[in-house]
Amino acid sequence: MDINAIYTQIDLDLQGISSPEGLEQFRLKYLGRKGVVAELTSVIPTLSKEERAAFGKLANALKNKLVSLIEEKEKTLLGSAQENKSSVCDIGMPGIVRELGQLHPLTRITDEICDIFNQLGFSIVEGPEIETEYNNFTGLNIPLEHPSREAFDTFYIKDYAKMLLRSHTSPVQVRAMKSGKPPLAIVVPGRVYRPDAVDASHSFMFHQIEGFMVDKGIKFSDLKGILEIFAKTIFGKDIKMRFRPHFFPFTEPSAEVDISCIICKGKGCSVCGRKGWLEILGSGLIHPNVLKHVGIDAQVYTGFAFGMGVERIAMLKYGINDIRLFFENDLRFLKQF
Ligand code: PHE
Image (cartoon, rainbow, N blue to C red; front, top):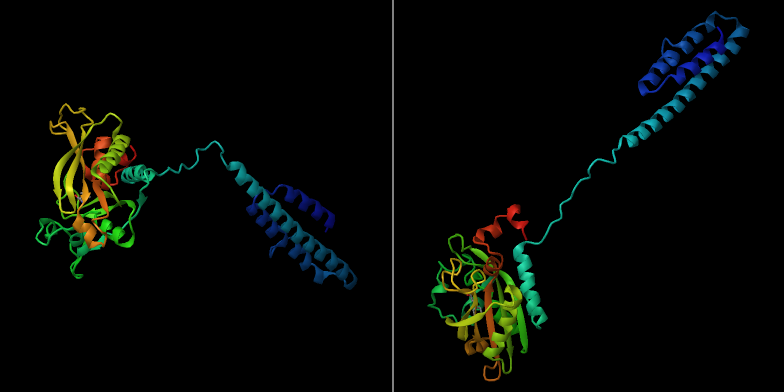
């Protein structure tokens, strides 16, 4: 048997291999049970003693050579497979687009409103949504017989007597005035809850921003000036404002504040119900009884307070006619802001 011829054949075979399957066939051909090496070894017993040793050596060398050749080829095949993979990458293919999120319109308008007051020197404070009956009503001079205390106007928490979901942000007035001393200038954004049937203008949960200022010599004109800056920044310089007498137990005197209708500019249209005016918030001078409850001397200090519905402000500003749109998470609506 011509061992050199075998080596030449091995070289030729190796050059033709381009896949792992091809290499496996090669391995079987030479190292398999009925392969070339096995065939060679099988003739050993027929040889003379002297020949056996020399032949055995040759066969062994061939076997070792084959093993190392297969290993080498395996490595080159693996390397080119990886190269192939990277050359398959199509750099012209569109990438994965990750859509940019954005703030909810209510968050944006809340930030916008708080920023205005912040720049006027108000600090921003938050309070809990689960409140005591005292902070939500009693401390705010709301008498026991007041209709807003009824179970159909306030969510009471069954197992905790005297606890409720706050129906307005005004209880934070009580908290802040108890824990801090005047001068105080604070705005309070947050959620409030009322058991109203849901429709285009009512939701059992909505957002308010409360604002108040307490110091020596605070007058109604301070309230007026501050609110005018607020309204003109949010709705535009040309809007007009008016204060309409109203009643709140925690302010005296009290007023509701209207702006001239931003749709018809005061002429009267369907949005303002032909009145030419749109109500935007409730306000007044803090009732002396409220100051008394928190231990502030009403003879020395006075203050004003106001409270507005964030949804209402957003609906007026953007011309939205259904409050439910804010809470349905419909991207077609949310993406417009
Ligand atoms: N708390 C009142 C409401 O929810 C609004 C308000 C706040 C009115 C402060 C006057 C002063 O309707």
